Image 1: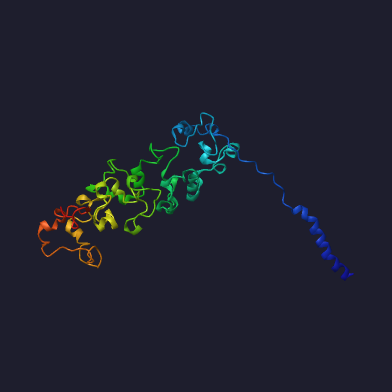
Image 2: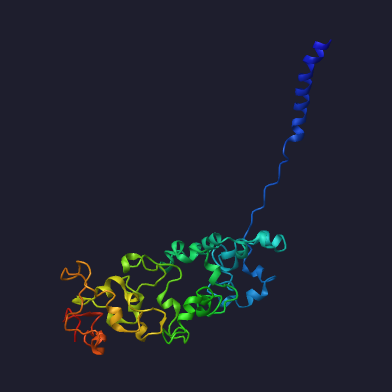
Length: 317
């Protein structure tokens, strides 16, 4: 009897397990309703403050005419279809809310439309993107404080909010007139990134906005320094303007890095090395130059064409 009961026990357990299978099967859920586009006019019901001035926004596309294509224009062009959002009575989880996005998600959303612009071709590799500073960090689509580029603040103040050290340089005695409004940061810089520069063997900042044939942005204004010249000054052509000048501001005349001209020139003109036009390194001053004499300390008194010359290899008059 004991053996019969022992043999029957596994069969009983197996039978009970098979009977319980239907009870453990997951319940079938109804298919999720498709999230449909509802049109920007529906958004006006709950967001009248945004709708009021949205017709002045570059993202506005013939909403009033009724010819809107929701997937590309208007509110749903950025925030995605609003069907579920309307059905739920609002709420950020039911819509594409930029305040809930990661930096990478926000960037990808904006690049759905803005990836075709050459000026933004290097945005993914820019220093701003690598630091998680993306589109909505600087731009405000609905409440822009700047009439141009939909910036969250006036451009100078926006850049200063992170670049405090540069702000101090623009308060120096000799400077580019950024605070006065004559020059803007984007006249020299591309906040979306740019190709590797041609000067300094490509090691300079990639946040500059190149001029002409990928040359230094200084040449946009200082066109007389561009050349080409018969006799090039290697410091200018190879290393760039900022080898001698402070680009933002300086306590020295002409934005120079040193207060006395000859001390700046002698940083390179020391005769070292075996390169240059005469294979003798950087040319040093001759014995006739008495560097204790003030007139010889003013190198540019004679070498006036030091950015390049078409007549003299020593850049004389």
